[in-house]
Length: 64
Image (cartoon, rainbow, N blue to C red; front, side, top):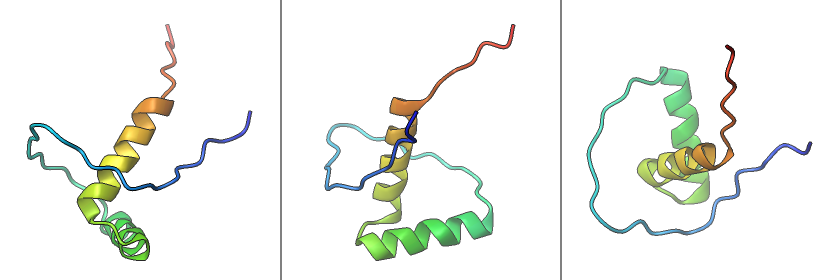
C-alpha cells in the first residue's frame, strides 16, 4: 500500500476554538518551525493540518 502524503493547502478553520498545551521535544519543535517557515504557514496552522491528516489516516489496532 502506498504511504499517504501530507499535502499542505490553504484551509481556514471556523467556529469556536480551545487553547491547549502540550510538551514537544525541542528538536521536533525546531523541525515544525522550519516547515512552517518554508511553507509560509503559522506553527498553529501546520499543527492543525498535521493533526487533521493523522486523524483521517489513523488505523487503530486492537491487540486483544
